[in-house]
Length: 171
Image (cartoon, rainbow, N blue to C red):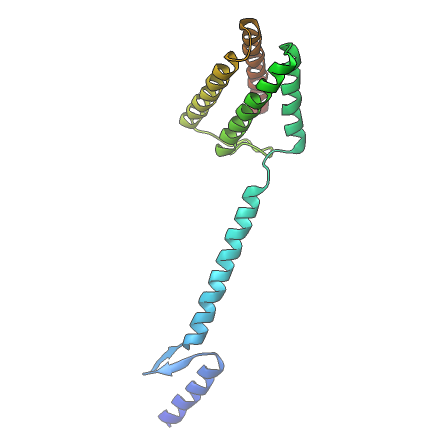
């Protein structure tokens, strides 16, 4: 009678995709392999989805257009010659890309405003200052002293506007 019960368990286990070996229910190797394959497939799809999302721009077209408009306004305010425009544009574009990359690294973009610790805020400010310094060095080779002074004034104005916007958001 005990054997019959065991036989019934084996049949029942076989229907569930399990086998009894030495009194222990075990899954067949094919079932284990399929389970691992399913897990691997799901993991691959999650990684693929994350990679696709990472490629999505974090800034809207409107925000990018605003930045480009500021670049054009800066060029006009500095009264750049055509030759200077050709040299300054790539410098400012590269600077913009670096700053956006830094901001994205801290979680900014797409309308998000992350909560940064004091250390993170200081690190962000330090990185942004380094980019500004590098940009000013590059611009100094192209601009006159008066134009460079005006550029620095424009940057100070932009920083002041940004600080005011950030203060108004935190209230």
